[in-house]
Length: 154
Image (cartoon, rainbow, N blue to C red; front, side, top):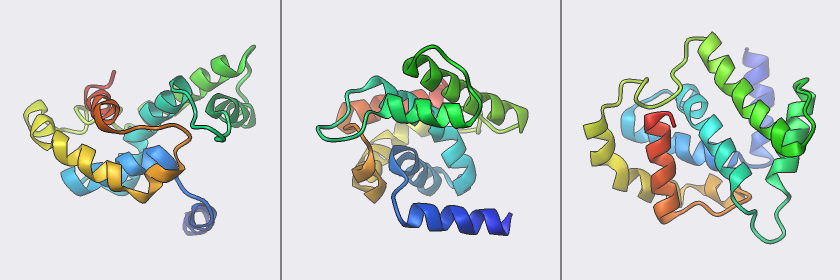
């Protein structure tokens, strides 16, 4: 595990970790959720978000990138969009198999606490350096809606 963690750190130390980590840093800081768990909770929602929103000008197509990752994971699909969707489902299935929460609600965050923290979540995530490497824009109301989905599990 130490070797794997070191290799992963070297990898994203030379790139950036994008939307899922921007959300996860904020969730961890606000709700005291361990980093790995907060990334695991945020990952499927952020992947769905980037796959369903138009990429910024000059950014690589996120659906094609997710489809490539899906193929590396052994996922077979007729289209890139189908492959991306199956990859997101595989992430969710892995969380279920390992007993990890699939939402903030499942992680024990009450709706009242979530609603009281929503403005803080949006403000912090908007300023997270990882937001700059997201292939599509996610700010203001869209970011607020994304956090609500992460809480509800929808």
